[in-house]
Image (cartoon, rainbow, N blue to C red; front, side, top):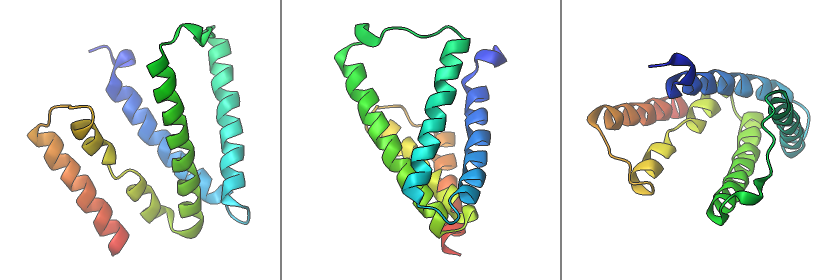
Length: 141
């Protein structure tokens, strides 16, 4: 397996940066409106992504994309925005040690199985249940 192209490497990177997102977000929403904080975060993400596209010369006209790609990317953007708004408000109101595990509750596993028809495996089901159980223990106790 080529580590540079491995989904696992990127998934671990996502987890690491998500942890930093929680930490910096918790520190950043102190004393300001959580919706404004989300807006500022969004502008930074836009600038960073544009910079990466520019450095890698990956800009392309999206006119050739199929309509269903547009639809699902727009829906994903709406879901992301609503997720971020909820996340920053939750960070403002609650401790990072409880908010972050709930945010990572693995609801996507259920959606992958139900909506996308992905095949379950025993390790995935047991691991998913352990994630949910751990999140509930952290949130409730």
